[in-house]
Length: 298
Image 1: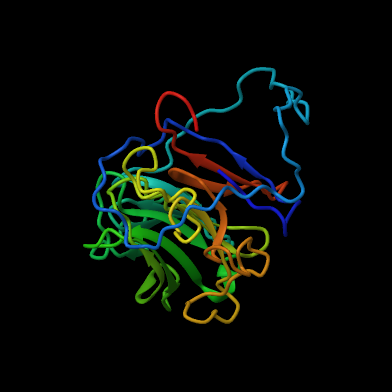
Image 2 (image 1 turned 60 degrees about the vertical axis):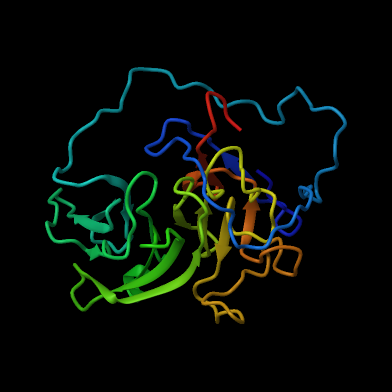
């Protein structure tokens, strides 16, 4: 994976590539995507000079191994969920947790551990679920307590497109308003796997979106290095500023290709199936779980 860092040289993308995830595996692809193709060479960060031979000396010493007795235990919180694949805290002070179900529903769990049997949001009629498809991501706006906005990523029915949409809460804080849905974009996906789908707001206030490479095997559609495609990328968009021309969101000015040379939404490229992303709250760095292609990592 390549992360152009000319305009944000201090940012580092740390990778945790997990082979053991809920939806690992490869599915044979279908026809190539209709998106334009290109074959640019990988971008070398401006702050790093190319090296003839790799250095065998790590730049930083590894952290010390933990010692002492185990202090982590597992305790059931609730039951009755159907294919849960993500848990988010809205940050609104309610103490609730919101569970993403692959079938297209989001359920709330109270601070005392009680599961609300009625969904917070039900968009199952819009979601193509099964295999690696479905409702895959949820992110609450950093100011959710005031603006009641949140964002979801899902596989659209029947097209199979990777879709990101915004919703708002109704007058009842326990229920979202399904009619408030507004699609930010939908990216055609040529195969049924490698959908990515994770969402996260960064410390910069921008929305980061994980997009898989389109499926199949060995990046067979060539999206990893195709800077005109949004597939096989980590995207970064501004959902608060005035939308850019022809878009439903704004482009952060420090995005690597905001001035041209590639899709302006791209923040990093060359990933395979970035199933989960999250930010380190202390360092502000993005960590990504990118599903590998076999017994070794990419």
